[in-house]
Image (cartoon, rainbow, N blue to C red):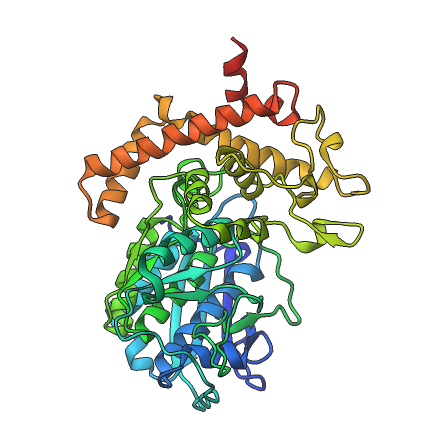
Amino acid sequence: MPKRCEDDESAIRVAVVDSDARSRPGWIKCRIEENLRFSAEPLASYFFAKWDPLVFDALLLAAAVEFCDRIKRRPSFQWSRDIELRIPVHSPAVWKQRDVTESLHDALEFLTGDRWRVEFAERKNAINPPRQGLFNLPPAESLAIIPFSEGLDSRAVAGLMSREFSDRLIRVRLGTKSDDRPSDSSGRRSPFAGVPYYVRRGEHRFVESSARSRGFKFALLSGLAAYMAKADRVFVPESGQGALGPSLAPVGQAYEDYRNHPAFTAKMSVFLKSLLGHDVRFEFPRLWFTKGETLLKYVSGSAQAADWKETRSCWQDNRYVSVNGHRRQCGICAACMLRRLSVHAAGLSEAPETYIWEDLRAGSFEDGAAAGFKKIAAQRNYAIAGALHLDHLAGLRQSRIHAPALESTARQLARSLELPQHEARAGIERMLIQHEKEWKDFMEFLGLDSFVSRWTERAYDHAA
């Protein structure tokens, strides 16, 4: 991590306070119940067995970290920011333990690329526990937790693991939609029904979109769920391109993206052990496979697997992905491009109307968009970045320039996953070979006249 920068442009100072409390001059007030709001039912679903103030404080920390990450833009001349956060907790003595604070800062700084200083103070008033509802209790022999969202990998990996482990696998909902939170005939709902808080900007504006802190949010929610359910394993539903690709082939001069990376989750395991005294191991069952391979395995095993079409991969804000009032996926951001590549690799198809950019085979970027869509120019850079990321990833294996980085990644993964280094290197190699094949096949399908092919290098391998 680089030296601390004293320039105010990169400094963020946030004090989490009750709604009527004052904060230090020069500090941004982040008010509980205004900027950080807890939702009663999802919150109660985390405390289905008992109330635990330490877990509540960890949830408040996750919300506050997200607020800090989004409230101030990264400076134009560097990636890192200095972030100071003061937060009230029920048991500051626990949070101030050296191993807790050091492991917390280590995880946050590795994930976001920022310099963090988190301070803990005693709450003036204890939080009233949420009202208990009726919940389906996890089985006594709970095997593992799996975080679950509306994403394609999430749906596929959760489905695959459920076939193997049945009701011993507990889903932790990472979204706010309610249509996949089942209740039984007696009205009992599943625990961990959704993210138990909302982060709102209030009088401020959220201006930073890199969203690196999402990795902390998802890992912490999953780890807390494992603690409350007395499970010791978390299955991360991410295939190799999504877990390793963002750090192997970063965009531009951005800091490497470790949101779903084993090196980050290993640091979260250390933090959770220090804070809770509970061992949580994050496992990546599809790390050495592509998203296309994961999707194909999912649809091959069940008639119900057609629900993959209901998933959503797009990173874009809803304001930018609507046509005539109907929400779509953009079809050209890195996440959408990976989805479309994977659907093709699995031998499947989607309706063109799934995406704003209905036709990737079009000769021009503009011609690929749906009729009636007006915000074409604003999306071009996202599209170029998405295509080049996947193209870059497809060329890594044969690049002598990137050979040292691949060896470094193998060493990093070997430490994080407790594997022999040669095994980690073989896993990376296998995933990259498969991605390269799928990408070349996809480029051949799009054709040399496609606007996507014209942006990339690998497409021209077929023209020789």
